[in-house]
Image 1 (cartoon, one colour):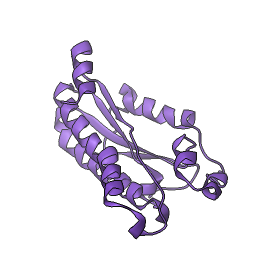
Image 2: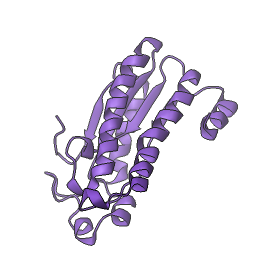
Image 3: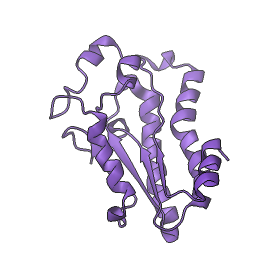
Length: 179
């Protein structure tokens, strides 16, 4: 069992809300530039870790518990330079949709939030300068979102007010539709 799950169960006796929000991304102009190690690291961080943490947490969840996974606009509208990252984000959406159905009879909800473009430290750390300079201008609001503009969606999905919401993927994308 991952240490964080064990520690949480030891301290609180159960898990009511699980938010999976880890991510690794890097940009590449050609598939040949993506090393095997890079591909493995991206999947290990973005989808494999989510699977193992969720698998360990679910036995400690009661009816009414909520799992919220972070995907991305990249799952539905992938950028060519983010092939590995976008692939994992599509996997997260499918993982969440299947998990919601699998856990419904136990009263545990699973949803995903698809942000993008949101200004986080990941952006300047992993993107070329020209992409950073124009980041967010491609959506109807013509600006990047801020983390505080995504947070209310996570809070809503974790709340009892969302007790009938499961299997949803909620876009926080500055007006760019995800259909």
